[in-house]
Length: 231
Picture 1 (spheres, rainbow, N blue to C red):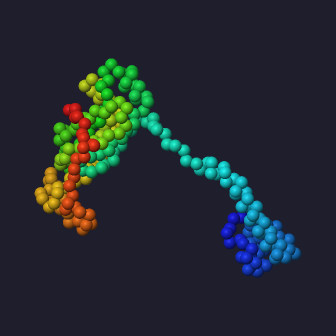
Picture 2 (cartoon, rainbow, N blue to C red):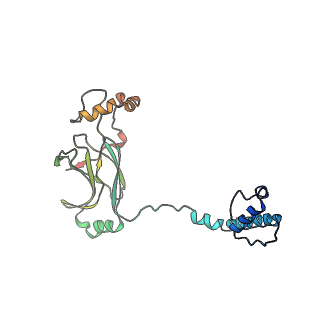
Picture 3 (spheres, rainbow, N blue to C red):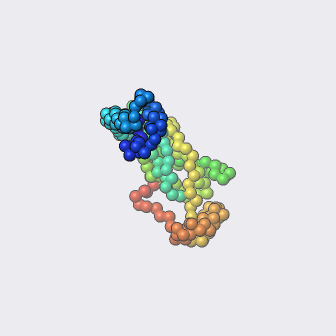
């Protein structure tokens, strides 16, 4: 029994019949000739016992509920994307131990390192130009990278995590498809890459105008310079 309303003042305000029903609800044996004072004492005593039992098991509950540190790695090969802005994405990945050993030791003779393959996908019904695809080399122990995507008409991409062997590449993991935001030109000048209607919608949006869209200027930060591309 654990009810904050079961106080002495509250119980004394009840009729004897209501006290008997309350005692029966909490499984208390009530003799037929027991007066209301004894019933109140019995109810309060039962509440105190149940409260003590909860405190005794409290340490065990707290110990069970303690948080545990997250593992550094989950030993799976995956790659995922967080879009930062129209020109940059944050790529993070993991290569499981078995894949590391397979490519770096068992097939080390022609192993050329790991790389990210940026693959353009059909966007708004427009078939992408295969020339837009490119590779970016990463170090063997890298797990993340800010990656620059060139501006263009295609805004939908997918990134593959690959292991290079000679002139070929084994795909270890593939990201979900992602769409980069429309690249907005400063002011109300001509829109870039044939997306005039989308640009106009942005500049006509009252909330965007209140946020200073007319003064928006996308800059390339020096701390996220693109890696050398391999065609």
